[in-house]
Length: 137
View (cartoon, rainbow, N blue to C red):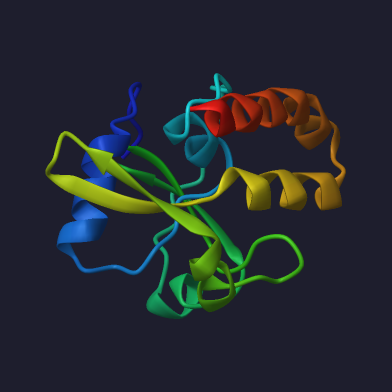
């Protein structure tokens, strides 16, 4: 089901309620920590349902939910998985009722520097400035 709006909070609540171990990474991770980096994503017309084996793989699954897009990444950066990244996360609390783990800005910056793609290079100055501001607080 494709939707014109995205309700990340609902997606996060469903994952937490389902006791899913996850770490928020990428653009949403940056936004949760104060970086002004929202962006538009392409829409795909393909409607394939993921299998459990797909979701448990180290690959990337670009999904659409009734609340908006959800990218499931088995690994990020140089094949870093959940266990390797867990110690590099921060807890983000939403209105006292929902707590999620997000990749810390230092690690997000490192991963984007290593990736070296144009879109990653473009956002690096914003992420670095956000990190600098957060360290002042």
